[in-house]
Length: 325
Ligand code: PBG
Image (cartoon, rainbow, N blue to C red):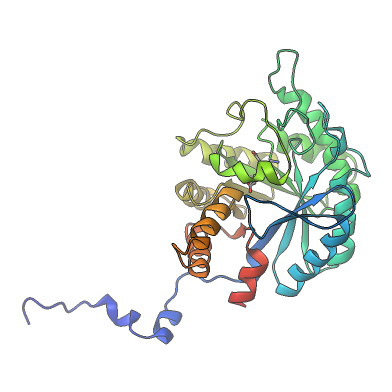
C-alpha cells in the first residue's frame, strides 16, 4: 500500500528476546581489565576524590581487590604504583622492592591462574617532574635515555611476575627496545601491550591525583595530538612491527574513530582504555541524577567494544562484570 513502509526495521526491536537475539555486540567479563592503584605504606585505602569509588590500595588491601576481580570473572588487572619517594630518574620503578614490583608479586600470588596481571611500564608515577621519561640538560624528555630506563623497568617487572607489560610512555622505539631487553634476558615469555594511539588528553586529569603526580609542563612532545587520526594507526602499525602483542587506543570515548581504524588494520588484538576523566564524567553526572549511572556505564563500554576494541580497561570492570555475568 502506497505511503506505508514494507521494510520495517522496528520488527526486530519489538521484544526483549528479539533484541537480545539480534544484538551485534555483547559485553562479557573476560574482556574487561581493571586498573588498580597501589600506594606505598600501610593503613587503609585512600579515596581518590576525583574518582569516587576508586581508591589507592595498599599491598594488603590489594589482595581483596584482586580476589573480587577474580570472583567477578574479569580478564585481568593493570597495576599502577604510587611511591612515597620520587626523583628525577624515577628510581623506584627499577627497584625490585619498589611499590609497583612489590604489588605485582602480591597480585600474582593472589590471582593464581584467574587473572592476567599487567603492569604500567612508564616513569611518570616515579619521577618528581611527572614526565614519562628522563629529562636532558635542557629539560626536554630524552627519548633514548628513557629507553635505557624502560629496559631495566621491564626486567624488574618480568622478575616480579608481571604477565603483560603495559608500555604507556610513548617513546619512539620503546616496544623494540623492551622486547630486545626481555629476549636477551631469556624472558621471551613476557607479553607486551603497547599503548600505541595514546593521545595528549585532558581526560587523564583525575589520574594525576590518583598517582599524586605534579606534572611540570605537558606531554605534547610525546603523546599524540587529538587532531590526528591517521597518526594513531601509524603508531599501532609501528608497534606491531616492533613486536607488540596487543595494541591500545587511549582515551576511548573521544577516539572511537582511531579505535575503529586501528581495529581494521591490526593483525593483533586491539584494546581501549576508558580513562580516569571518562570515569569521572559519568560518575559526576550520575551523582547529580542527570544520567542513569548503570545504563551510561554499560552504553559507554558497549560503544567502545562496538567501535572495535577486543577488550576494555575500565575502572568499572569488576562492578560491570557483576551486572553482565
Ligand atoms: C602513564 C599513564 C597515564 C594513564 C595511564 N598510564 C597518564 C598519562 O599518560 O598522563 C592515564 C590513565 C587514566 O587517566 O585513567 N603512566
